[in-house]
Image (cartoon, rainbow, N blue to C red; front, side, top):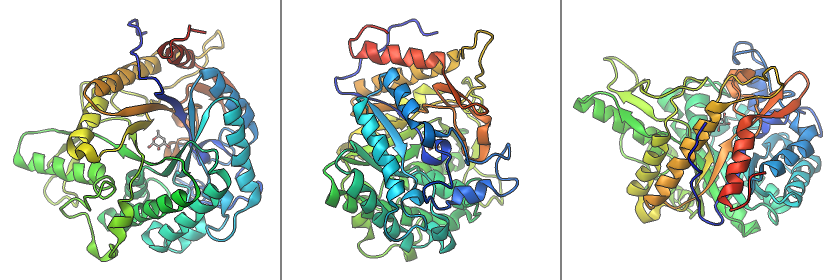
Length: 449
Ligand code: FCB
């Protein structure tokens, strides 16, 4: 257990937790919701580690009041959730399904009544299946469809959402969804997946315009970043590191901040039309940073189809996902963003940070997760250090409020501050929940509860 007092954060620093629709909601066939690529993928044999699906997940759709009470008890000032596109437009086009909007309308009102700012992500990977059937993010039209959907959501919620996030982790969606096939829609195009990058970014830019037309609320995107650790000291190792950095960290940031696509082999100019780069570079108010770990990179073996090889970063404790626990990587990453983009970098919020462990109730019925407490303590200190380094960080969101359905890992990875018994849906706050509650209170100058 950390013993040093928690670091202090500036007044107004945003404290939050994040979730996403398909990972917690369940109720996949209710109130007119359509099918998404994740429904299709999860129901395809062999795609998910434990053969599970998000059909029920945490049943949040029916239990959101209980979950809002957990947020209020935690004392967070913000909650980042995602809107399921197939609840709003079951087929990905056409008018809004009022029952779908009603659910998020109630959630937003409940959050505000509990003193928690609603932060809405428009796309956390659950593309309506009919759009995938028409080409998914390989098709330019999907970008236009996304902006039309953004408009429908903003028309209903734009007066109350405090921060909009267009896309969640377009890099991960492109690489795992369309590059290697470990995520929905399960396509294996490797570098031919580049149009997915461009069309997501274009969709982001068009959605920014749609949101600006409907709401004065600030707008962001949540990118996944991983500082690159070059393993080896040859020129070939360094070139591999640079290639991976361009792919993971710059492909979805350079164009957003007005620099166009990074040089090298990534961008296929035939999909980039006149005016697209200006659309993509529309100013944003916040850059969302999702950080989990650094990536080890070295030169590829001869004959490899990739310009790099990934290798484990050693020397850190590891989570149940086998990810290194490296808070220094967060400070390094924030410094890299500031150093690379300078004054073009908008204020940053850490929109995801968290860890999976095999948490289960002990004989006393309580769930003790000291590793998560150490993880959060370390990462908050890294954010504090980055602030001291001069990076403008305005918030920190823990992934995640609840244990939930972790994509291709199904229910096997528990990321929550709150334990969920999937058989009964009982929620049990872990010791990390109490620790974070007290830490937030202390940084706001309130006594521990
Ligand atoms: C991120 C995703 C989030 C969750 C965490 C563990 O890449 O955005 O949905 O799966 O990883």
